[in-house]
Image 1 (cartoon, helix red, strand yellow):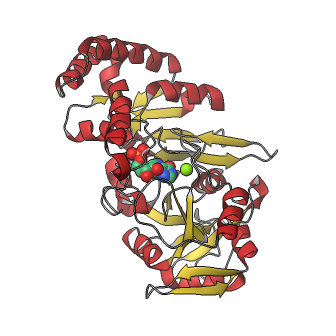
Image 2 (image 1 turned 90 degrees about the horizontal axis):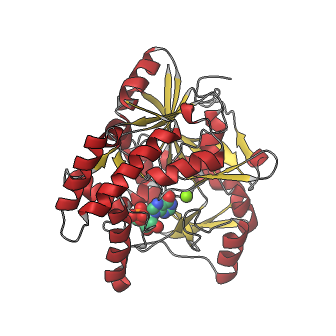
Length: 389
Ligand code: IMP
Ligand code: MG
């Protein structure tokens, strides 16, 4: 019986896709439980091509893994149907929780309008409707996946959504909900209770992999509000978003880069020299998967990293973009006292492990599939996260 979680320790885009893909090869279920189409996870494939997933868990390449989408998600049904086709997954592998929230067209519009009205205080959202959909969830007027299982349910949920705010068109939303009911039905995915499924699977000794979207610095409660996303981007999401007992999670694998990146506004860490920034952006592929925006690039911040690991009980680390540390040769970082300092790239691992108390078990030193590797150390990491050698 093993349940493990993979999460991003920085501002998202740490390389969770490749780490989840690697670990998922031995998983029976891979679970997304927060966010929705605002996320973008890239999986490098063995032949050199890449796969990008936004709503499906990054366990898609393990044909035997169940792909669960928990109730903590906000789902865009149309985009999900498209993603299932484009990625080419058997829809029967997907189990979508009936309590997950559904993103409506008004949410996408309001996301864009809110951003425009904020002017230079804009958050820099992905404009996928994520924030407004969560706002309606907490206002208890949102449309759930379960509402779309019957015509009556779809219509009354659309009416509730339309009536909850001025300026929402009831007949448009009703048409939309009726369409979504049909699209959802046609996708061929299973709608059910992800919590019940996972608790049962856990009793049957299944290997369950939780994939947290975004990064801890974007967490609604722990990031620098309001420059955050609208969901829980850490261990708490396993309980609220998947309905799984958090104390059953055996390992929390934190994914990190030897530097920081951020898309969107909010506080950030000092940057590199221009030449280094440009090199990292191009060679490290630092452009948004969902929006294509160029990411801001700054140095590694050990104070933030330590906090992320503490709050989430992170015990294993995956260090990606190690090739960028090699390029830098001496890697600048903010130490635990908040001072700017440098370390030789080959000593970076001990600085990180000391600051976090977690062992580096995975590294990735290039963009290709084969650059993702697992390390077997002596203490603690002599087996992989599933307990296998
Ligand atoms: P939202 O999630 O679209 O509401 O955007 C809120 C903030 O989170 C913005 O700064 C986004 O750029 C950022 N964000 C959301 N999802 C991701 C992600 O998957 N990677 C990196 N940044 C993200
Ligand atoms: Mg991403």
